[in-house]
Image 1 (cartoon, rainbow, N blue to C red):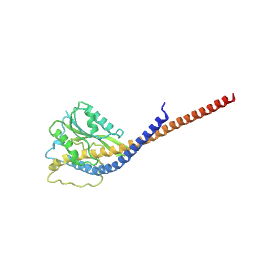
Image 2 (image 1 turned 30 degrees about the horizontal axis):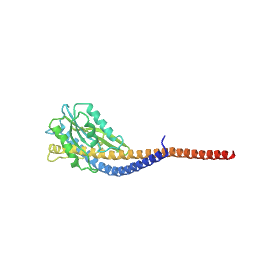
Image 3 (image 1 turned 30 degrees about the vertical axis):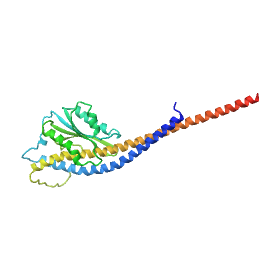
Image 4 (image 1 turned 180 degrees about the horizontal axis):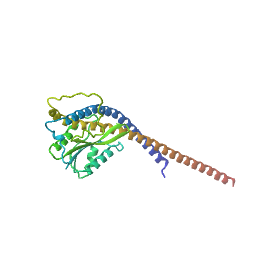
Amino acid sequence: MATLRDLRRRVNSVKNTQKITKAMELVAAAKMRRAQSAMEASRPYADAIREVLARLAQGKLETTHPFLVQREVKARLLLLVTADRGLAGGLNANAIRAANRFVRGGPPTRLVTIGRKGRDFFRRFDLELVADRSMLPDRPHLDEIRPPVTVAMEEYLEGKVDEVWLVYTRYVNPVSQVPVTMRLIPPDLGSESDKPEKPKGPQSLYEFEPSPEAVLDALLPRYVEAQVYRAVLENQASFYAAQMTAMRSASDNAGDLIQDLTLVMNKLRQAQITKELMEIVGGAEALAAARGK
């Protein structure tokens, strides 16, 4: 049975842990607000470029861009976005689980990762890791995620893969983050769950210069980069939200544990005091009986 000194040490240890989790919760909350602002700023651009691309793809084009060609799928490439760190509940595990289901559910798959958690997980399996990017700053720039995206596009253009897919965690609200699997190349412009609703009423008439084909050639690589950049920002906001929630739960659990340990410690101390009093009373009675004889 634990002694009173052991219980005091354990209470102090849990209190120190609670201070750390509380500080991490506050830091994650501050970073989440910045990440959420960056994520919300990226959404209109990503949605607009998708809308323009859909208009171009539905029109009559003299040539077909390689990214729009539907091939027989013999090999795929998965671009997986995860966080670099843990302590965020099931955020990384859910994204990795979605990626693992994708890998096991179809043709041979090559992998490009953004984030250390996804890279470290799939390194243990017989899966070709083409490129990876980790240790991104809190405010990543497009240039910092462009190299792995360029590798993914080159893999498709060189015919090594027939599809490019993206898995990331979409930010819904501070307590809800959902793993999303979407096809990047060829772009599936009509089936993404996060596609914006088509506006009602009169719409603008677009004229593309110098030609729709030239605009499409320039727009498709930018579309892929914009979707991946948005996914990175969504994942960062999701990470800080999940970490904030996890650290709050850890702080609450630490508080409950401190209360339970304090109760046990008080009971043990009261038992020791009662035992000492009984020993004193017993000794006094024995001494009085000895004197009476």
